[in-house]
Length: 111
Image 1 (cartoon, rainbow, N blue to C red):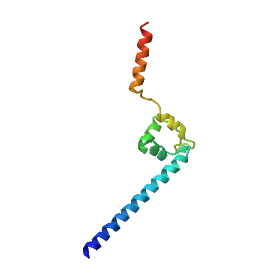
Image 2: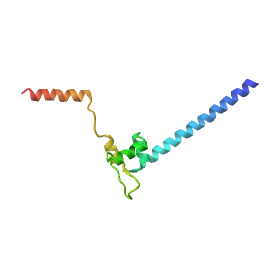
Image 3: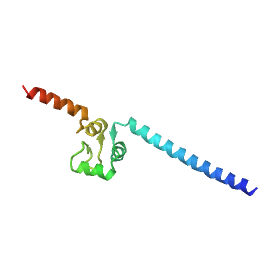
Image 4: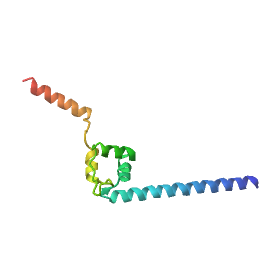
């Protein structure tokens, strides 16, 4: 009888944890859904979108390394398309692209 009670308690604890995990997952889905619909982003949104910390995003704005807007002089806003373009800058070539460039260079310079 005691074992059955303990088993029931463990199952109840497992169910509570499972419910909590589902709630957290739903909250993340809701957050990302809202973020996906936005074109004008806040610092928190940019941090979530890029994976950078909020303080690092602010540092990038203060050093003018990331495109941003300050319409009221205080709040910082970002344009989603500009942030996505900013993330894509400084592309690193693949090994194959480097080899192709080298072959092209050798072929044109050996003439």
